Length: 175
Image (cartoon, rainbow, N blue to C red):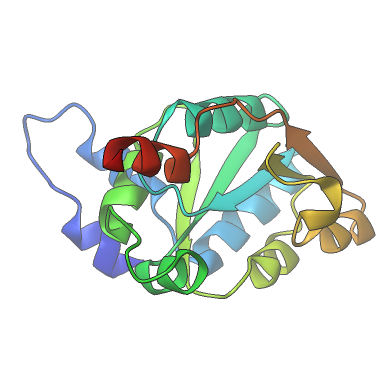
């Protein structure tokens, strides 16, 4: 994560550089943070995604996810991971840019990047109380659901906002 933290623009006149940088953590750092939070009785919410071209649909999911607990952890796919999932023309925005944008959101507590094909390793390491996903995923399509439920947590599907997906936005721009 340190390579991302170092690439975040630092400007002493900015209102947020230290706050944003403080939200970007490695998996190991977030494990420690979540273990301490759980020991204090806090509820951990986890979500993940590409977050390429941040839009209102993303904000809706993140806002609703935060309302489900005390700490919202967001795992952002690396550039190579996005290419494997979405194809060679994606991502539009680099992993550094996407991580900074997500970290700058007030409802997000911590951000980490992941290069795995799915978030199972992170979910298994963090033991979130809630796994939140946007409504474009059916319950059966939520990767990691069985891990969360096996550990006593639950899956929350947040209703999808029609017309707000990165793929739809890219298609509208092309046309």
